[in-house]
Image (cartoon, rainbow, N blue to C red; front, side, top):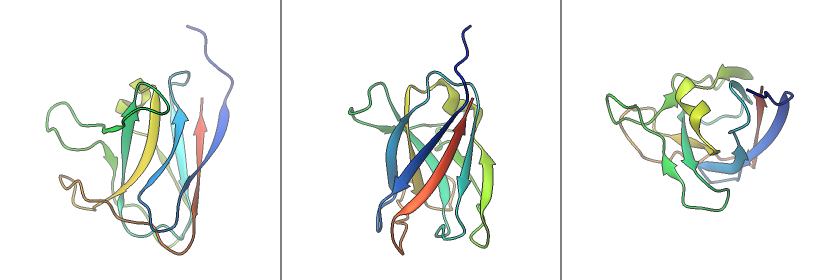
Length: 122
């Protein structure tokens, strides 16, 4: 297996939106997401696709059919979170600000201007 050099990918969720731009995941095996303190309270889910410009769908847990997500994200300070292992199998990924209720698929718009998120991949 050929592993790519580490990469830092800046992604943005536009003001009053819930989904980021896409980033390529298929060359990497692990990732960390750094979210600013301006994150509006929500869980972070993941939408995936086989092409950058295709139709994205919610990445789901096999056993429960619930969205794969990072829960209990801080809104008081910059925090970094390890991406769930299920995301590593995706080709293209978008970060999704979603309801803090795990099984709910409702968007939670990020407000206060564009939200810059750093994704570290290796």
